[in-house]
Length: 172
Ligand code: ADP
Image 1 (cartoon, rainbow, N blue to C red):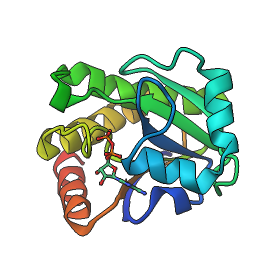
Image 2 (image 1 turned 90 degrees about the vertical axis):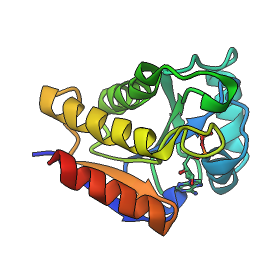
Image 3 (image 1 turned 120 degrees about the vertical axis):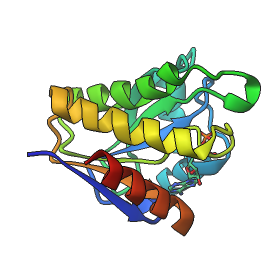
């Protein structure tokens, strides 16, 4: 039985097996949730990223590192499409959720926390970013792509929490 939950908070503090990072293609840190994860995980996270992803990651793909100093055992890094820079193919955004769930499944993660990918600096329209997030995860649960007990969306602010809750209600 898999569950889909929504909380408001800081993803770096989530006590789950894996948290998902909205990384950049270069995989060398940045702002937003990426910056917060690197700060909380400590400097060894950057060393892991450099070692494991010498050429970075493609948009829509995902890969993992240890969680280093985070409560989470793993960080699954995925690169969302940068809407602001003209990357507007929604299938790439859906791919981020699917690939992250696949990587987490391979690791054996039983609980996974996601931010809303591309919804910040990358400028994706919030309604579509949230709808893609929720629909893609529900489809992945239904198809058995993920067997994790919990997939959790973490809203950084109250308005995102409301959006996520409304979308979940619509798609249940
Ligand atoms: P992107 O570059 O993919 O747009 P951002 O990090 O700018 O990534 O934003 C993605 C989402 O993550 C936004 O909704 C933003 O408010 C949220 N966010 C930023 N910091 C955190 C955090 N510490 N925990 C959870 N969500 C966060």
